[in-house]
Every structure is written in C-alpha cells, then in structure tokens.
Amino acid sequence: MASIGPNELFFLMQGLKWTLALTLVGFIGGGLFGLIVALTRTAQNDLVRRTTTGYIAVFQGTPLLMQLFVVYYGVALMGFNVDAWVAVAIAFTLHASAFLGEIWRGGIQAVPKGQTEAAKALGLHYVSMMKDVILPQAFKISLPATIGFLVQLIKGTSLAAIVGFVELSRAGQIVSNQTFRPLTVFALVGVIYFLICWPLSLWGARVERRLSTASR
Amino acid sequence: MPQSAAAQVPLIALEGVGKWYGAYHALKNINLTVKKGEKIVLCGPSGSGKSTLIRCINHLEETQEGNITVEGTTLSDSSRSIDAVRREVGMVFQSFNLFPHKTIMENCTLAPMRVKGVSKAEAEATARKYLERVRILDQADKYPAQLSGGQQQRAAIARALCMEPKAMLFDEPTSALDPEMVKEVLDTMIGLARDGMTMICVTHEMGFARQVADRVVFMASGEIIEEGPPETFFSNPQHQRTRTFLGEILAHH
Ligand SMILES: Nc1ncnc2c1ncn2[C@@H]1O[C@H](COP(=O)(O)OP(=O)(O)O)[C@@H](O)[C@H]1O
Ligand SMILES: [Mg+2]
Image (cartoon, rainbow over all chains, first blue to last red; front, side):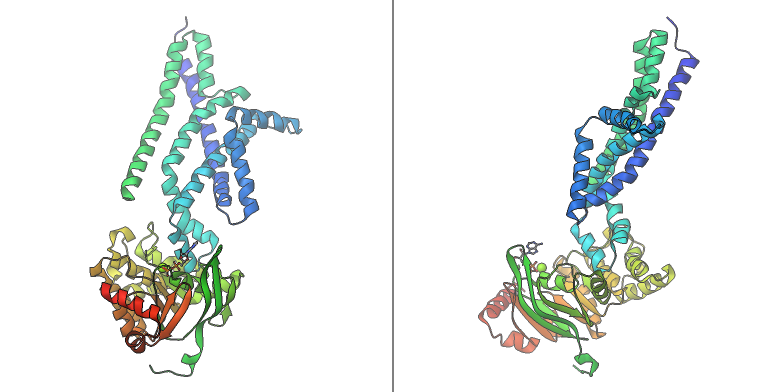
C-alpha cells in the first residue's frame, strides 16, 4: 500500500480549489439571477410572476445531478461545443438562482408593508425603493437561509465530477484508488469539507439568533 | 382665520370618491375639499374608513369612483399623476415606518436625493433644518431603534417635511405612543399648523382638534356623516352617530 504523502495532499488541494471555484461560480451566478427571480416573484405582473414560479418549481423539483446532465449534454446536442466549465457554470447558476430567488422572495415579503408604503409616500420609485429600502432589510432577514444554501452548494459541487471535474470528492476517489487507503483518504476529505462548512453553519446560526433577539 | 384670495383655491379635492376592497364598500361618495393652509381633523369609529380615505389621496390605495385632485393634478393610474401628487403630499404613519437600517439623517436625505436629485450636502442641510424644527437634531446619527417612540415619530415628521410638501397627511400619529410621549408629537404638529401647513389629521386627540382644526370631519361606515368647525362640532353635533361617538371618546379621555 502506498502512503499518503505531500503529492497526494497536493492533489487533494487542487481538488479543493475546483470545489471552491465551482461554489463561487454557482453562488455569484445564482446570486445575480436569484435576485431577478426574487424580484419577479414579488412583481405585480401576473404573467411574469407565474413564469418565475414555474422556473422555481422545475429547478427545485428535479435533482441537481439531472440538471447537470441536461445542461451538459443538452448544450452539446444543440450543436455548441462548449467547455465543461461553461456548462457547469450554467447548470449551477440555474440551480442556485431557483433556491436563492425563493429564499430572498421570502425575505422581501417579510419586510413590513409599512416600509414600502413609507417609500412610496416619499415618492421613491421602484429601483430606489428596492435598492435603498427593501432589499437591505430582506437580505438581512434571509442571511441565515442564504448561508444554509451556500453550505448545500459547497457539498453539491461534488456532482460536477460526473462531467469530468476533478473537484475535492473526485480527487479523493482518485487518491484512494492509487493508495488503497479509502478510509484514511475519505476521512481526510470529510474533514476538509467539514472545516469549510461548519464555520459557515455556526455563522448562520449566530446571525439567526441575533435576528430573533433583535425582533423581540 | 385670515383668508387671502389664494387661500380659497382648493389644494386637495375629493369628488364622489368610491372605494371597494373586493366586495367590501369601504368609501361611499366622499366629497371633501381642503384649501391651502386648512387643517382638517378626521375622526370616527375604528373601521369607518379614515385611513383608507387619506391613503387614497396619495394613491397608496386605488379608488374605483370619483376624482381626487391635488394642486391641479387629478389622480389616475398614470405614474406621472401619482408622482406629481406624492411630491406635494407628505405622510406620517401610526407606526412611524422609519427605515430601520438607516440613520435618522439618512432617513431624511434619501428621498430628496433620489426623487428631487439634490446633492447630499444640500439634502443634509435641509434635513438639519427640519430635524432642528422637530427638536431631534442631536439624534441625527442614531438609528431609529435607538430613539424613543416620540422621537421616532418626530423624525418621521421631519423626513416627510424634507420633501417640502404642500400638505401633510397624518394617520393616527400618536396612537402607538406611550401617553407621556403624545404631547411632544402633538406640540410638533401644532407648531406645523401655526406655520401654515395644510394638514389632514386622523386622530382622536380632541384637544388637538379644538386647538388647531378649521374643520372636524366625522366618518362612519365609509361615509362622511357631518363636518363643521370644532366649536359647533363638539358643542352641537347634528347626528345621533356623532353624539354617540363623541360620548365614547370623551368617556375615554
Ligand atoms: N387592505 C384591505 N383589504 C381589505 N379590507 C380592508 C383593507 N384595508 C382596510 N380594509 C377594511 O376597510 C374598512 C376601513 O378600514 P380603515 O380605513 O383602516 O378604517 P379606520 O382607519 O377608520 O379604522 C375596515 O372595515 C377594514 O377592515
Ligand atoms: Mg386607521
């Protein structure tokens, strides 16, 4: 049996780099589109609202793995020769935007109605009302759930392995196959995930406690 | 009340206004004109439509019948007419509705900067003027939650004044306050009235009504039942419903 040396650790760290990069792409892309989703879900227009509701139903109601497959092979079928990166970025963006959009919609709707009324009475238009008054409060309310989703997303990036990404989980699998030490390797991989996700979860719990005492 | 020719022009006019919430008829054939500089106190039992009436004036609620005209602009669904009306009319709410994530100063400067496009320096100078006037300039850098209820309501009044409106709508501005804070807010409103602001106040503070109102308007079940100057309204109410209401109010105060 080969031992786990600096080379293996370096390989795992390369995988971790991809895990973080995928998370970042999913979170930023999902965040931008999620904002649009949240705003359209709270829009006055019926058609706009229903379209987004359907979008959310599809992406929350199907597994991320399937979404990855569909985008990865679907884009290829349409005749585009896209990089795996682009396909995965699209899939994670769509997936994350459905969840973040729904979380933030809840936040927007949890902001007391009096805030919208005060903004309107002062003559503020939609953009300023959202940007200056509603969204800052909505994001604060949504922060615990947003952090919770970020943790899910970090772990969810392991699914990108099926379209060829050697992220942390896949890197662990490869190292385990080479060294025949699956237990040690996956314990190590688990510890790495844990060290990233656990502080985030703690942070989320702390924010939530602070919000609930502030509202009392 | 000294009245010049300009004071005769109605600043706010409601003509045959009707409003439904679904099947519920909330306002029935409301006719009300308010001249420049006039102070109206609107009273009536809970659920009679007082809030609905004043919220229709700045289009926080839509009407289904009649016309509302403010300073020559008749409200329609067009955003142009709604913007024009909201520029002339400020509103103060029962629950203050200050923006909790912004300081008192930022609460006061946001709308002038975003709506009127004035510079930050100019908006802050205006804000200082009105915060001084409601006597909370020393609280300008605090957040709303750090202020007492009375201070918050005065800040909300200053925020509305910063848009330099021609008329102010008050929806039970002292109802959410502890009794010892009611006076400071009423005094602020009395000062505003003395300076000639056109005001429509929904309130059950009858002392305030006697002191500043030109007319007291009484509503019940979505209708204006009667209106008159405070002297005659309180001493000689014409309708049984008004007498019953006044009896209840006076028993509680
Ligand atoms: N958004 C709304 N939807 C449905 N009914 C409403 C709404 N707002 C007010 N109402 C109803 O309209 C009536 C008048 O309400 P309101 O104007 O708030 O009365 P007041 O301010 O005199 O207490 C009440 O019966 C109330 O239940
Ligand atoms: Mg009311």
